[in-house]
Image (cartoon, rainbow, N blue to C red; front, side, top):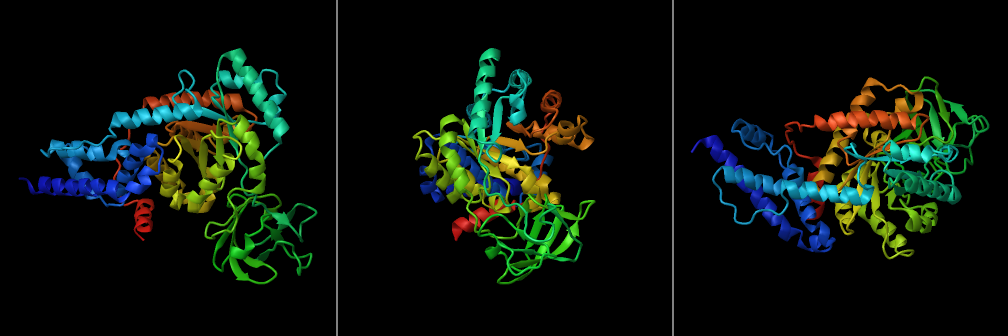
Length: 488
């Protein structure tokens, strides 16, 4: 036999053997999941086995022989390997359950339960972020529904329950008039880690800073002069966990500082980069701590106060700042205090820790029949670095497809068009990629209807041209870490 063919067969048999062992290795975990998700979870584990292995050379050999290069096997990993082995004359005694059709159907059914049926001629569902101004236009909700909105997102960080209820009522009335259904998604606010100026610039709402300057993080600002830049992160438990050398980003990453020293009165930061045209640190801007293990709860007291409303009115609940499986356990337990049938949770992946722990988060999510993932690219880009966003958002998509978990593509989709009425070339390309997700989320803006019309055209064209690239699978660090943790 051809030596290359022999090598291919040997490597496939090795992968097949590892995947067979996974079922026994994780038997207890699989039994703890919803029966509806066990086959999907097993496929997910098979995919992690594949992605912890360097198979780039194997893929090239498979391609040269006219066989499947395994580049699009996320939804049916083990079965794809088995089919390829059959082409080499190997008899498969126990075919894997998750075929390509199984994966496609599972994803479609779960997407429909979470987001409803996509509008006619739309390839994806569309989630529109609600704004209080929508209540002023008599036919605004009807227009949104007619132009593609299938999910209305209510952000609990803004307005209050009276406004949220009015939004839901208006959507309900518009649905009756148009005959178009609409799901309600309630997004929990999560921790509000925002800049609060305590000394310099407090009255103006901004403080001028310079590269190389020392600024301070302090909860109360005691022991500082009025000429010093002192910031509270607005959440207890942040400052105490910081260590020398850790990075701190302000204002969506426009300002980078690093922990210089830790003292009793606060933490000194040295400003390393200012990317904005005007060198000001402003109040009420976001702060990110990508290197720090923050002692901040993912589920805040305010989030808990929103849960009775969410359990009564929401079809899905967005979990901001989720970082580990225990966070999801806590949220679901809190919701069960108000209803036996809790709404499905959408995990917002927006922190470095959530990316690292994504396999465990997905497996925890599978304990309930339905849940989803939102790739919250705003904070995520700051946390992991803008240069890694393309790589990481694709990795999240692959892992979710392997687990048959629907994905919401979120943050800054056609943002320029939404704010100014004119789209940039780059965001047109980005919107084309967004159309490959099960749901697309658009933020608030002045040109929502124009965004929907443009997005529909882009989505239709992108889906019509969808041909998966022949990817080569270098080892995926997320998969390697998962097995390292499980084996320890």
